[in-house]
Amino acid sequence: MKCIINGTLLLKDGPLTGKALLFDDKIRALTDDVPADAEVIDAAGGCVSPGLIDVHCHGFMGWDASHDSLDELRQMSRRAAQTGVTAWLPTTMTLDWPTLERCFAAIRQAQADSLAPDWRGAQVLGAHAEGPFISPKRKGAQAEACIQRPDAEKLRPWADVIRLMTLAPEIDGAIDCIRAAREMGIAVSMGHTDATFDQARAGIEAGVTHATHTFNAMPPLNHREPGVVGAALSDGRVYCELICDTFHVHPALFGLMARQKPDRLVLITDSIASAGLPDGPHDQMGATVIVDGIRCRFPDGTIAGSALTLDRAVRNFQKYTRLPLWQVVNMAALHPAMSIGVDAAKGSLDPGKDADILITDPDFNVRATFVRGIRVFPT
Image (cartoon, rainbow, N blue to C red; front, side, top):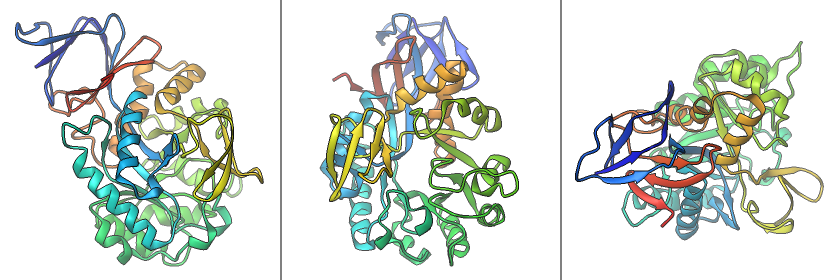
């Protein structure tokens, strides 16, 4: 049994001081009494937070979920834990279907392996398939040659792996695919889409519950044609992803999103393999990506993804909104867990949930990360 003392506990409904957090592989209690045989961990006046959950992360440091490599998934999981992430969805790009199947097979193995004590990194919860059932008009950094017509039967063998799928609800066959995916237990997100408001609403009625990197790779909000943004923001069933690097979305909109989606805002990284590498050009899946600080672009200027980490997303959001830290942490822990249906076990410090725990300084710089009670950073 372990016990964290001298920290501010960031609970899902507010901060709590003066209590110790008792845990083994599960969170056992918020208590005044430290058991005599417990391993005592001193938070030294910092914050004790639930582990962060990244539901949209392609890669970093040269590693990529689209490389169908179990070793790279292991390396990414270890690196993610250093940034406060205790669970994540390796996110695939729009690739040809045989390659995607190899990626899903690697992620399936990582799902199982990440439950073992020697994994020493963030738990792999499954895959986020960003494509290939998307709109060529809003493909962004995705490969147009690999875009396909929605086919739910292709998903069926991988329903145990794919937790979240991004598609364009307006394309032929999408509505039937959404319904079938939901029946398989796959959460469906609308993204890389040129849908009108009515088409987006039809997708929501069919089962869409998520919007992929809101504002990006979709039509802008217009007062006469609200589009996907308007449909997502106005419907209480939809979780909205947000990339809080201050480049993909202007920080002036952070507060608006928090007010409009107080229980459905999901902070993500959308980080790519070039994230964490030095500024300059880098090869990514045979293409050149130019890293320039927080910006990752192709040579033609197309945005290629982000260089963000999720702990930095929390700090950015808190800086520009001045919301209480516990509330912002919910957006990077509880809300992502809810959006993919794992909140019974993850996303908050409720007793009985997995002991996915962070210790940070008061400014949310990560000092220690525990996954199901095992310290995975520092090791």
